[in-house]
Image (cartoon, rainbow, N blue to C red; front, side, top):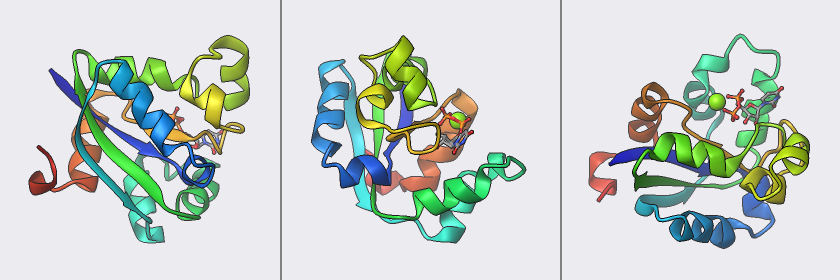
Length: 140
Ligand code: UDP
Ligand code: MG
């Protein structure tokens, strides 16, 4: 079994899509091992996305992720990191609607920036991101 982190981003929370998105992962066979709603401070969002600090979209990404509440969850399942990435779809929601219309980003995102959901992209990122968001006591 493997664990991965998802964060339902401010755009999807604002749209009222939290329940539908969590239900999709439950239907796909994942178990929710931790769950909470919170709002990132600027410092926290910068640190969470520190690998992107040199990218041109870093400032815009931090602004977006601090623009409203998010809902984070730890999901557990076989091959969870890769399978969850497949279910969320490509980074750009417009591309997702063309090539992968059944994905979460296709259904609930807008474009390359406002794309509804984050998911860990590797074992390395999951092992940074899960304890960044959830303490041991918050995970079952
Ligand atoms: N992003 C953006 N502009 C871009 C690329 C990415 O605003 O040109 C944002 C988008 O919200 C994305 C996040 O930065 O989800 C992290 O980018 P990454 O390349 O890691 O995409 P992901 O792993 O989320 O698919
Ligand atoms: Mg990424």
